[in-house]
Amino acid sequence: MKYTFEISISGCNTICKHCYVSGGPGKNIDLQIYKKIIEKLSVILPQLKSEIDVTLGNEQFKHPYIKEIIETTYKTIPQYFSYEKSNLPTTGIALMNRDDKEQVLSALKTACAKMAMLTIHGNERHHNMMVGNNQGFLSIVSVIKLFQNYGFHVHLNFMLNKFLITDWEEILSTFSSYHDIDAHITIPLYLPIERLRNFQKYRAEYNECMQLKNKLSVFSMDEKAFFDKVEKFNERSIFPLLSDWDFKQKNISQPQWSFFNIDQNGDLYYGNVGLHTKYLGNILETSEQELLSAIQKKSANYDYSAYYNIDTLPLAKDLYANIFPLNSNYVFPDMEGAIYYWLDKINTPTILLNR
Ligand code: SF4
Picture 1: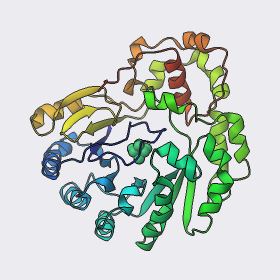
Picture 2 (picture 1 turned 90 degrees about the vertical axis):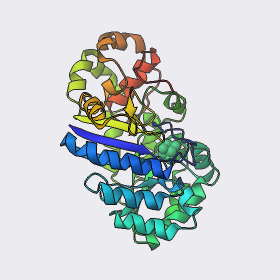
Picture 3 (picture 1 turned 180 degrees about the vertical axis):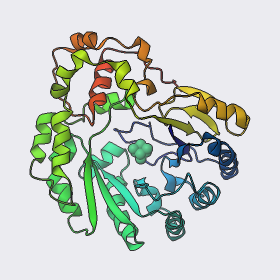
Picture 4 (picture 1 turned 30 degrees about the vertical axis):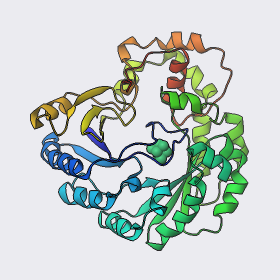
């Protein structure tokens, strides 16, 4: 089993419409509480004897003591925490507003950070609307130079939506003067939560994606990889495969990977941030043995069982009959995106905790 523990150290400056972890305003974790959490994890995690990642969420640069947080974590549990493989996603807003940029970037480098990933949703007006912050677009434009000046590689993450397509030429002209940048297009997930139900009106359909044909040869983008996904994971391509889909079998074949979240109070939850399915105890108050046992009892929650009780899901053929005929052709990043969308359309209950 592989384990990921995300510690929520702060909220976000944005409320992105595609966000599957329900990001938005949130409190900063108390530095002393954070240090105690890391101390306790340094005792519990080795006992799992497994591949483990500890990550920080949501917008790290929003925390006033992020430098101390990075240094403490890297010093205490370097075997589980480093930025070596992280793409360091950020909106840039909080970092650009800090006085200690240099010290924070230096702490990141010590913890092996090499790159930063900036997500773009459309031209300035549309980007700011999609992230809910009027500083959003210009912060990205200015933070690129900052990262590059400190030797970070910059990767642009173009988040697919209807505006990204209509604004494509304008977006490219904004970023065309930058060098040593690469990029890819992300097709947003669908999960059975309110934020993503509301995002559907912005989700690109198959025919809209075709407008990007032969336009993705910039920033070393892999146009073929993008269109392979568009061809494979649009509703009309997936629909014929649904009739004999076996949810239980598909759930078993998902990666053996478990996700946990520790919130600003030290509460440990089973499930990704914003997608909790069970409370397991408080890191500071619950004994190490109880926490370890609660973690070990949990099976993988990579897909399907992360949101649904597999035993009560409708039969695929019944789902098929209920959503026929399709009146849209939305594009998803994988089969599951379309299936969760359809399950949600017929009001399939989830096991997500309402908080
Ligand atoms: S996508 Fe990232 S930055 Fe945007 S609201 Fe979600 S967690 Fe915050």
